Length: 81
Image 1 (cartoon, rainbow, N blue to C red):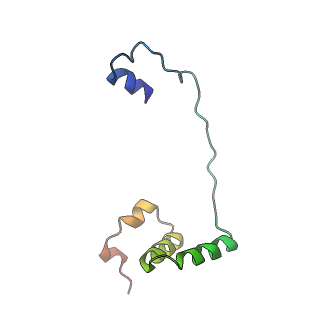
Image 2: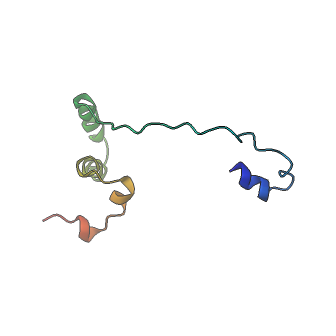
Image 3: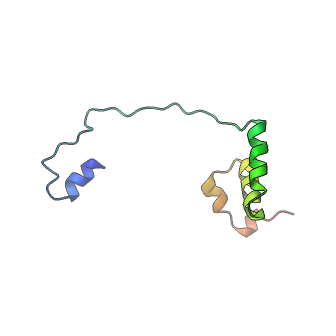
């Protein structure tokens, strides 16, 4: 980002990038699962929300879809028999 700013913003070319030479922090990916108590709290919290939102969250948890995939579903694909 800083390198792009040096090109675009007038007067930035003479300022060196302070992050040059610093390596990125590599985080190990990990799986995260809800425990039983968290699922109960989620169910209780969804009781105060609109029905469509509760159904959306339940579908999200049960299907394993990514958020973008779930939100891009259209009616013909998501209709159930």
